[in-house]
Image 1: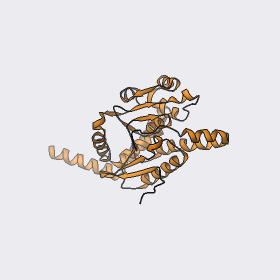
Image 2: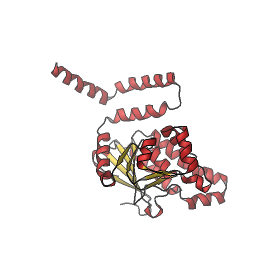
Image 3: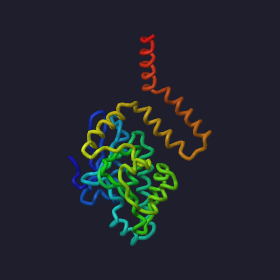
Image 4: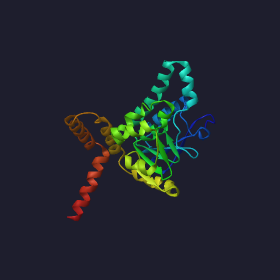
Length: 261
């Protein structure tokens, strides 16, 4: 039975797809400490489940996530710098853990993904969006800094585009976000659910070990020089050859090739 006090809901779909729902629609799914902690725990559990192949992340209600709960942020100001640091580090740790998960995480954005909510979407490995969805980092308008999300944003868009987005604090539509490299796929609003189901099913059908190793390699080589990236890639290449999925895949390919010849 679901906990009525929970701010996170998990829905099980076919083909090993698990959907995590941010469930504070009355607060536009704003991130408070309890939600961040619960989300971290839920993602850890799902990553450990062998039957889960893909994790989707959605928001309940009309919006994905409006960012940090400003009431809690304001309270942390009164509590002092250490309280603020602890709060910020918890969200930062969530972003780090999402990148370290074996399972790919796909954000499915309807409505607004703003500030930390936009950071949460882009901390996922892939982002799908409804055409009417909007993205932005409006923190500067409050005299605040989108500090942790900057590490993600500059990797997606490049330095000058990232600075433009955070310095102006403008909100952009899903099409523009796709052009900037923030969003992978944009669907017409009426087609979002069907398009998402097909996309997630396709991703879940891929080799779980190959996807996990690909994700690990992608983030592991970030920031290293060319030679180190090549050497790391060689290590992963050798490791992939030893997986059951790779052996089975090569056997299938070679059998088809033999039949054609």
